[in-house]
Each structure stands twice: as C-alpha cells, then as structure tokens.
Image (cartoon, rainbow, N blue to C red):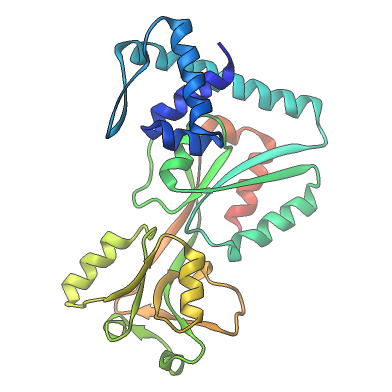
Length: 290
C-alpha cells in the first residue's frame, strides 16, 4: 500500500464522502475511488459503506483507521524533520488561517518576521476552523490562527493574539458617513449583507431578538471579498471584524458598532510539541506583540 492511499482513506474519513475528499486532496474523484479500491483489495475487504448521505466506516475500516492515522502522522513528521535537516536555509512554516481572519493586521507581522529570518518560508492555508484543526491534527499545519467561539482545551494550546471589534461597513456615499458610531437599530432600516461564515452569527441573532431588531438580509455570502465588494457598490451594509476591511480604502468606510459593542478574540492554536520548535516559538512571540 502507498502513503497516498492512506492519505485518501483518511480524507474520506474526515470529510464523509468521496466527492469532498477528492476536492480536499486536489485529485479527481475517479482517481481517489480507484486508490481506495486498491487499498481494499490489499486489505481483503471494504473500508466504507456508501449511501446517499455519504460514507461510513465498515468494521474493517474502524479497525485500521487508528493505525493509519498513526502511520500518516509519523510519515508527515519525519518528512518535515528531514526537510529541516537537509534544507537548513529554508524552514517551512505552515499556518492555517480561518477564512474570516483579515490580512490587515497580520500580514505586516509576517513580512517583518521574514525580513528578520529570511530562511523562513510561509505557507498560508485558508479554510474553516474545523478543516484547519483536522489538518493540524494530521501535522499538515504548524499552527492555526482562529477566533474560536469557545476556547479549546486539551490537546490544544492557545495564545491570545489580539481582540478585534466589529464595525458597520458601508460605501463612501452612504449616510452613515456622517455618524461617529452606529447603533444596531440604525442598521435595520438598511439592506443588510449577511456574512455566512461569521462565527458570531448565533450571538448576533440573540442580540437582535433581545433588542427587537430585524436585519433584512438583502444578500448572503460565505465570501468576505464578495461582501466587501457589494458594500463598495452601495448594495447594502455589513457587520464585519474591523481588520477584515481593506486599509485606507476610499470607497469602503466603517464605524464602530455601539449598543451593543461586539468583539471577538483571535488566538494562535497549536499542539504543545510544536511550541518547542524555535521558529514557532519566535513567531508566537511576534504575533503576540501585534
């Protein structure tokens, strides 16, 4: 059996379907299916049962999964250690960023860090928090930067980087430009652009119910870029983390939300053993001083 077969098997386990596993693995579904079939032939039985809702592990699949995870994790760790040993001048840092984390505050830190340590190579992976934590568990990432709704416990370790307030974003010609701050109730008279990836949607929904505020969603999207561009065209207003917006943009303005103020905390999430690596420890220090 090949390591790629184990990787595809674990991708199906984590994503619940051959289609999503193939997308995650950046291969065609027929190629992934063929690799899994060859693995099943080698092991002497089916690893998954398939239905319309997705894939479930068979008894054989449940038996081999823990060992496959151990084998794959050790292989990835060995490869990373070999790269660090044989390419001392090029140390890769693999950082996962939750999709709603803006570049405005973090990108200058990465740029300064790389100037100080030119042998560091950054690989930035954008995904959902769930997807990033799975990759962290497989040692495909060194750390994850996220805004967890609840602080994660063992086996994760978390370092607070900064607190980020929410703002109301609007176009340069909008009447909100005349206001110093914007009350939540002011927004309900405007077309609202709903960010589907917002990790505080449930909290915001509860606040709206308490204050009897009805936000009419004129548009919904899971893309931060699309929301910003629709704000830019004047299609509506959006509630966004302040560092998700373009810096010094002439056509997109914002004001802090008040009554209530809403904020989120940004954390670096990692396994304790990763913190022992000199490059990770130094990066965490730089990020904590943002």
